[in-house]
Length: 87
Image 1: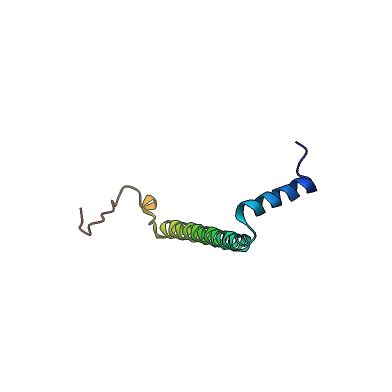
Image 2: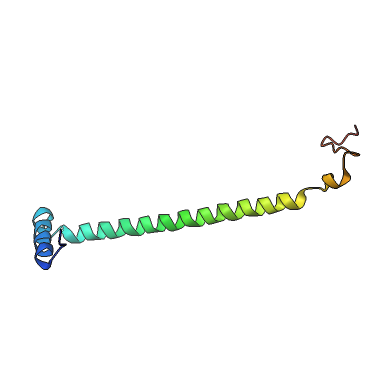
């Protein structure tokens, strides 16, 4: 296929005019513009949410690493108990 030439585009515009009418074309264009704007805004919000979720998981992972105790340095001489009682 060679692609669209000027005549092809002209015929396409005439067919669209016949199908929708000249009065409905501005409303159709406005509706399509609003839909595209809404879609673009939602995509931006999703990217921001993904960035926040990635940052939160990275912050939590670094906090987990910082909060780990050096129990491996103590060896097996003192087991750690989470209940607060002595073994």
